[in-house]
Length: 153
Image (cartoon, rainbow, N blue to C red; front, side, top):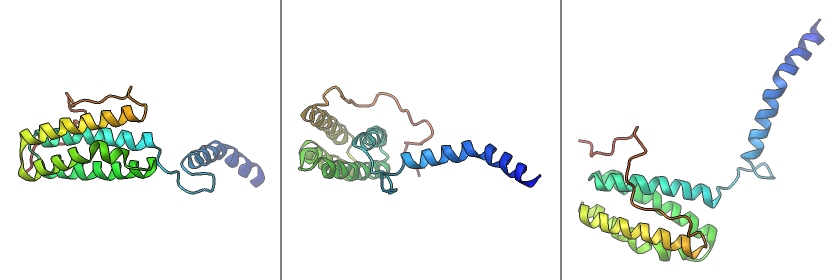
C-alpha cells in the first residue's frame, strides 16, 4: 500500500517540480549562476525612473527627485559598462548634472528645462544606437497611483 501512495504523491507533485525547475533555469545562466540583466531590462527600469523623476520634481518633492536621479545615474552607469565606451555619458551626463543642480536649488523651472534636455539626450542615444523607434517624452499622466509624489511633511 505504501509504494502506491508514494507513487501517487510523486505523480501529483511532478508537474510542480518540473515548473519550478524550468523557472529556475530561466533565471540562471548555463553555469547555474544568476542571469545578468539585459539592456532591455535596464531600459525598462530607466523609463520607470524617468517617469517618477518627472512627477517628483514637477511636484516639488526634492528628496524623491534626488533619489530617482541617483537611481537613473546607476542605471546609466550599468548601460555604459554593457555598451562599452561613453555613448550614454555623452548623451545624458550634462542634463543629469543640470537636474542635480536644479534639485539642490529646488528650482522647478530649472528642473523642467533640465528634464527636457535629459529626455532629448535619451532620444539622441536611442538614435545613435539604431533604436530611434524608441522615443520618449515628458510624462503626461501618472501610472504609479499607489505612490504619493507630493512632498511629505
